[in-house]
Figure 1 (cartoon, rainbow, N blue to C red):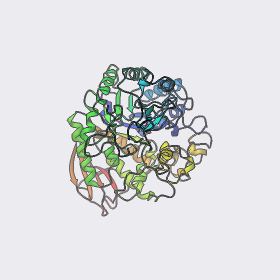
Figure 2 (figure 1 turned 120 degrees about the horizontal axis):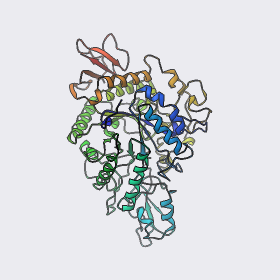
Figure 3 (figure 1 turned 90 degrees about the horizontal axis):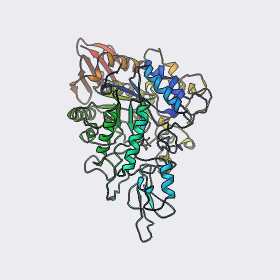
Figure 4 (figure 1 turned 120 degrees about the vertical axis):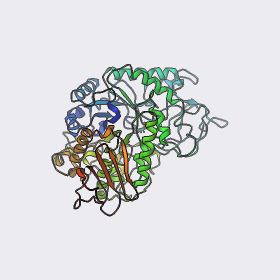
Length: 540
Ligand code: GLC
């Protein structure tokens, strides 16, 4: 069990998306008691910690990433007592629990923003957000050319003529982090949850809090979750130097608490050396490795990212945080079912080219085994242990992601990876809850992915994940060191301690080194050889 102060360095952390994990009351929306009830499943899977996406009071215009009250629980998900029970029960089972913190913006229904709207220009209430007069003779043009991540202008005008910045939806006004009152408020929010026993925070849009003071025009559209331009200076709204002192302050607050409380950055920043600045010894503990998530299924590129990431993190004394799926990207079992090198997809609809599901799952299993064989920590996204694909044929009328509307229906958005989980093949809503309701429709193929069709079934994706997590733990892979044995167009092979990890990206089967004993394989071997799109863990 990861009981030490440094548990996070090699931890496997499982992302629960509360809307879609488990519904205890049958309203079609997941909830906190539903999660608590399923903790034994997570314990059996063998993870170290759970990250919960937001469950705070919210009008849910961005699925809870629009927070109206940072110190409560939305009645859809339960109440504070349910949160306390979840924390206690997780700890009782030996699981850590981290929560999502959304500091870049509040909901437009947050009491601060309501007050700002009714207060005059230049008031302290407006100074908590980023309000400016517009351009043009009558101020009817936005203060600059910034675009919202979800599409359209990043500025919205109030009836009195002033504009406010929203890098995301119009209902998500950006806070002004140059205002000490905002800083003090968030320290207080950190303490509120730390005092309740949470083990840390996943920090939403961690690279966005500070904006260039001059509001320099920036014409390129901010791709959803896009980070730095690969070469060149950071855009004026992302990865500004000033964000780091905020995290240094937060770190000193966390360090007052025992038990190793952590901060993990959602920062779409590259290259690796730039991202590593978020995990310097006096800042955060982890930062999602999104370049790895985004990498094509090609060994040279993957090896390059692995090397760069390990080196950049080593240089600051941190480990690397691997991830393949989350609630913002097309699930990796589906991504990998498209031709190699396909550009980042912003959602998939029924009329779009459909993936090769079998190939996608085969590669996803291999990709996961490769990732879990690397030293460092790793995040899993709910349902990937079932090999769940994206819902790629969801009728558009069900879509809730604001990106769908704001992009003028050019981006289908992220609903396809957020569909409620299938627990039982033959139950209504596939066991998601006691009724047949689910807030997004579940495709009929969900039955074959249901947990009860996989647990205890040799060769199932669930059993593969469970075995991988157990082996990773017993061979200390998370705390190991990578030594390459092979990196070419067809295969990657490295040693991590006493384990040899080999992934075959080519077409022909690959021989294992003589004398190797297989510990785990993402698919059956072919006469002792490793077939295409398969990862093997072996001992020599
Ligand atoms: C992060 C979240 C995403 C959300 C956005 C705005 O990227 O992961 O789901 O839409 O921030 O809060």
